[in-house]
Length: 222
Image (cartoon, rainbow, N blue to C red; front, side, top):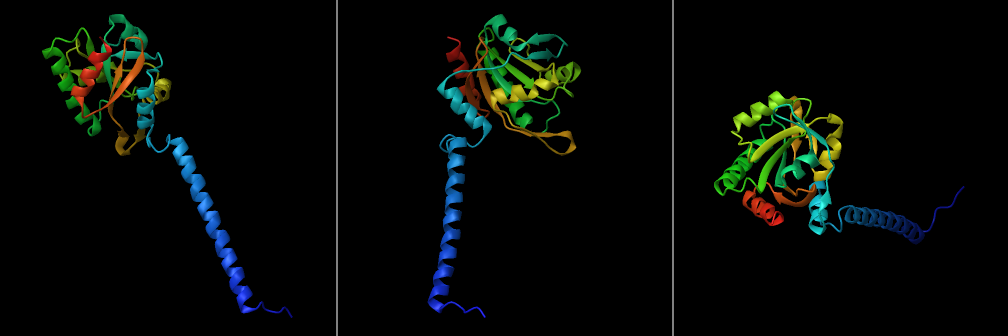
């Protein structure tokens, strides 16, 4: 018959087991925290957009030269569009059926258009809205959206991707997160992206700060 351990040894064994469990938990927590800090650049960034902002603040970032289609059905390359007239673009991302984030964003871009036209800046700066829902946002859908928002094509254009397969490259380049939602909708983050004529993302500004975005675009275009 096995003899039971003395009471003090049983307590010691129990304490040792608890200590090992505690130590393992602490180590797991520290490793997890270390991984989080590494992945988020020391805790400074917790979203793809924030990471992108941090990278852009350090140095302008090249964006891919993707094929686009506008509301008239014309196909054009993103870099060719930017370089064609030398203007700085304030870029935002939408889908035309959106009833949530895009509604507020549309008000911001309408204000930007008004400010650009009022200050006669349309030869230096323009707004470019890019749809990330090319399957639904064909040229007729883009035109209906442009007409609804009373776009002046000299200051504001709307385009969609010509190739749906390019969506991931486009969104990753700008730090946009898109998540499918019920009823064919999407949840997505929003910001104003300053892109120069050579196809570089040079600044990302909060969507609620159109004045700051316009000032940043003008500073880039000097």
